[in-house]
Length: 551
Image (cartoon, rainbow, N blue to C red; front, side):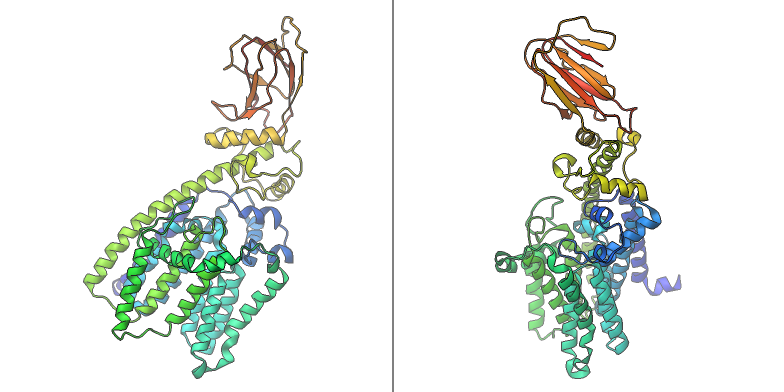
């Protein structure tokens, strides 16, 4: 207790980190493997040089790819919680290092307020709630460790900084801005410590260059002259979004584009205020320039590679942006120690911003929960249809209800399930899943099995139905008939065309249409056997005339 009384801000930070870890794990407890993670689970399950070094989009992801391979071998693929735990712990560690870095410059309390805002930065929900963003979070963690090592200003610190920077590159290309910061640090201290310490950034950057020549040069890129020419506005909007997010005035939507409406005037006011202070003979600390170079590098490189889904306000960019803004402010205000009243005002604003940002975390979790339902429902359909599904069957956006399962191919997925277990719903869980998941599972099942219909025109014969036939009177459009595996005949009396549609796990709707049947025809609906015989298909015949459904 004595230590707590002497270090109240640090003690509160520990409580905030614990609350963040508990809260993030609670928010993600029902989520499964999502989106780009399936590229690792489907295409990079086997350890090899290429599976580790192949780029993802434009990023190097050696460590995330290796961790995913390790996790599925240790814990299997039935539960994604281990990767959520790792992501949450990395975020907690990064927050602790951010606090240490800021405390050395602006004291305990300002460091605490800034760090807590990052811990619960709702607009950065993708990084906080989606483990695939371990690449971003890991690069930031070890980039911060590098900056702290450089603070030592000795050879041991340089060696640690080089190692941390190399590890940062192992997570993602977000390490590049930290390499630039290290290069500026070496340049600044060249008169005192010489150029001999250039290896601190040159060795990790050289390793990254070798990776780029061997693998990264084949990665997708959106570099264009248009992006280069429009980059100044992109950078200004990125900085404005970061400032607005930190103070809880985000205009960042969960989906779609937006303008950093509040961030722009806030950024302008901040720049004007700082400029006024420095015009009154407050010197700019030397430690500011490495961070300024890192921020410029980060935002300009992002601008050069901008594309759809990569706007300045994109959620995945807000984590790094907020940390860069805090690092810049910590260095510009180095040595400033506000009084109690000023701290109380800053703390009150931080609490308001925190409350606003927590809403984004909740909403972001809801977005990912929808994706989890689609994922577990769609994968359940693949497993139910395992007996007959084509090996190359893909869960593309046209049938999956989401764009996030494009890496899932039936044969590769089923092989992974055989080796590591299933993350999908069981048939019983699918039957109890939200309606949109059950509906999508029916659509996928209809194509994965597949269901088929063959219509013979003019084949209807008036006769009494047998014991295996169900007669439907005219206008009984809302009546449904359960189907058994195998062929079922739909005999339609002469008259207008009829609508034939099916459902299985869906309720209250028939999401699987057919081409229908003209009057006087006989249509054979064929249902293959699968792994969920206890859940039959139901056929709805929408017809004005009489019809018979016969097994």
